[in-house]
Image (tube, rainbow, N blue to C red; front, top):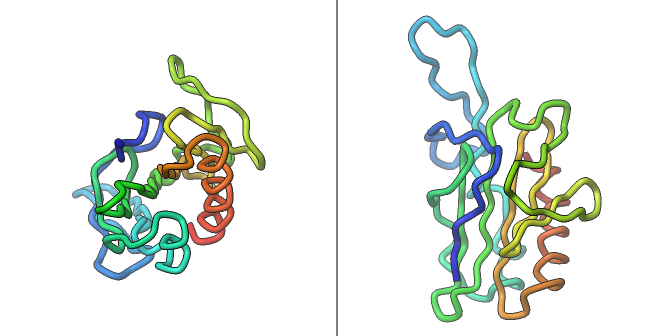
Length: 157
């Protein structure tokens, strides 16, 4: 099963947050007076929130994907997983995500958009974010679990 998140409007600029920091100020380029805050996706979910969903797991590791920070938790025996992607500031202007041309999605609760593969796309403040849940249950069970995680994540981003 794939851990890859669908390519959407998340900001894909690279960032390396300080180890252990939930949010850290990213370095600015020479002559740039703006600072952006980077969120470490691996600090957003606790073991007690992930283990009941996928069982034993690797504790969350930075992974590739779309967003400023992407973290995946995977059960090595079942390949069940949870992946969180946090977009950069301003990727969800006014707290709204935009439907992307060619990306099929359906409405969910609280402004969530469900994409294929167990992905729930949502705005957290002005950030376009995603959470993907992949379990043997699949379908509505994964969507329901993803929606619950969105509630937790929004409060922490």
